Length: 505
Ligand SMILES: C[S@@+](CC[C@H](N)C(=O)[O-])C[C@H]1O[C@@H](n2cnc3c(N)ncnc32)[C@H](O)[C@@H]1O
View 1: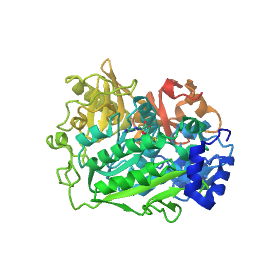
View 2 (view 1 turned 90 degrees about the vertical axis):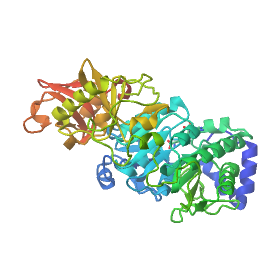
View 3 (view 1 turned 180 degrees about the vertical axis):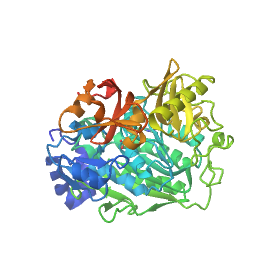
View 4 (view 1 turned 45 degrees about the vertical axis):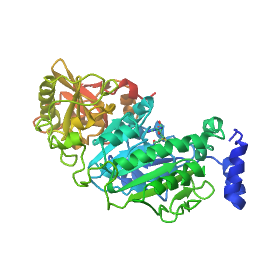
């Protein structure tokens, strides 16, 4: 790397590492490691390994993570656009493994953009439970929402809120919370020289103050007996052990439990050996810190109503809703569309208040589409923003007053009384869940033509059509059998419905 490391930083690292410092300093001459994580919502690990166009080597601390060879360009393969993997720095795959997510868990990813760890959490949930992915910075939530949609996440909600406002709306609610905290980024200096340029001697202190606030709010959102995983990509002790020790001193109901990751990681410093450090001279990855904080469950988390099993926000409880048992779209009591403020276009929840009468028309049109196109109907709480319909893992009242970017899985838009299916509906479907589908070959250019937005000539016999259905209409377009988007087929031509903002360039 060309950038000069700041003197204050190197002095501190020499003090921290002692005789190991030279080994650590040598790593700045090496190329950073790169990796992909298999999206097990769409493909199994053995199947991806069998199909992989590049060599992959397992990342020891993440069963779905693999190092990619130098020169591999995983972002330039149709499989990336079919959401089969997420391109992620190998050390960054460690924190979610420590969350030990169980099916049905309610998980909050508090600092989630652009969504690397949220997509990993979603894969572990396998469509069960609830994932709320939040980021404070509005611009960053766009990439977050897009990544969750690319990966075919059905049970996710995207918020643009402060951790304090989330804690007020969801006291004592979540089984697992990830705080992938904003930090000074010292562990990324080798990979991202901008981090070096932005660093000043006062940077770690500034972030440490922010981290302490985030930790306090997370504690209020956690269910008794739940787990918080805290991670940073920095070496600064005040942002790592410092933030955690201060938190533990004020929260005796929490304990730091070993985060060693089967011995792959080094222990934490300064009185917190239970934490884990990933040193670039000891693992094949960038610098990271992680701590696992478990609530003892013996007392309610601050702000909780103390009922761990039914700890739903008051707005949800009063309507009899349950995150674990969503109703079938169109069949539930919570049908009037409500929701927080939102943003986005073409599938983004916008700032319009929903039209009370519109929900019935939207649900009827949607039900017709589901009958004709899918042969089944996605379950969840229906939420209408303007003309945009979502199915949510939570009743819409639970999001009242919260800045909501995506209240759930985007189904599509009601336009002039007709239901137009949305792109995220397609990316989360399996071919067997669509009445009409078409598989394009990833190797002969036709998949890339589709991803570029081109119209394709497709003879009828190439379509897989459910018995009794007409071939004409919306077709789930897949790449080697994995959904990528919609097309509309008529008379041997496939009109391209792949959204402009997603196209292959
Ligand atoms: C390390 S990055 C998160 C990376 C992300 N977890 C991933 O795996 O892709 C930290 C994020 O925290 C967000 N952030 C900063 N301050 C925040 C706060 N007070 N509350 C929530 N998010 C915050 C930043 O916008 C940034 O996107």
